Length: 126
Image (cartoon, rainbow, N blue to C red; front, side, top):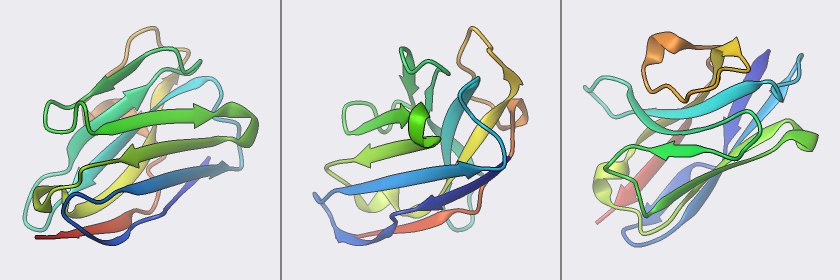
């Protein structure tokens, strides 16, 4: 499956962006999906995950209450709504699919995800 993230850009602190992750080549409806981000000079870190049916979500502490992950399986697309953005949210954001289909639990480690998409850059100015 190929994943393409989009929707990044430059925004002022306190602003909002909505990222999209479009899948092609294979349906993602049976996979939990995640968003990760990588700031310059830092490790790639977990941001949010959503179950394959969309009923369960999980967030990193740093974004909980500000970001919302969702999915539209009919469109084979996952979203990340980011509100009240902060300069520390500046990073390249990547979406990824769980390496196991129909996993019952959400996972947050990079090694549990395959099919990494090209990222989209988010820059938050202070």
